[in-house]
Length: 296
Image (cartoon, rainbow, N blue to C red; front, side, top):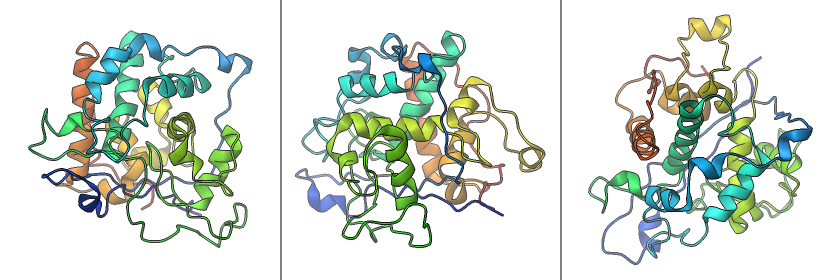
């Protein structure tokens, strides 16, 4: 039986009305999905300090996200560097596995994916479209409260909305519930914390990145070379590389087809961050054009 998709909704639906600038900030944020089978399992040493601070310095973080604190961005002042590092300490394997190039490539891939999900960039934006990541922290004008009443394991709380919040745009009760359970907050009863506490927000994004969901591997395992394709993966041409992380996040919408601008946007961020991290090789299989999505 196919796993029920988990959807991470687009950030921006009608943001132009919220911005006090003369240009339209356009989000290319996508819809991410994941199947059940949660379980990032760490050992006793998993609370040790991560290596992320040595990969992304505070200055580099500012260079990567040049406009995240502009008043034009609804999330200005939210996604601070300290909160990012504290969240990364919860997942020290992030940016901590493999050689130096592998560690940098993984961090670049993660930052690229969350940048796309929260982007405020547009084609002719100052400093280019890929300097506008982390511009949004919450979905604008959500289409619904994203409550799936068929998911009895993670029942919705009356009056709560499970729309997209945080760097990865966490959505739906069946995503908030296990994220909260894993990270120590009430995801079902207090989903607002994801848009109110930047450390929690970053933790939810890293939890999504680090946690395998059968039949999907974790994005972390893909980027550090631990992915071992099943027979079904081989038949679906799901080859390791940045493109497979896009398939994990939003394959049902973006993969197995050509001419998808969201895919190009994700790759654009990834290339920029790899360059800023010392020109690290982006690796093979940047897109998922020839890959069948997991949801098919």
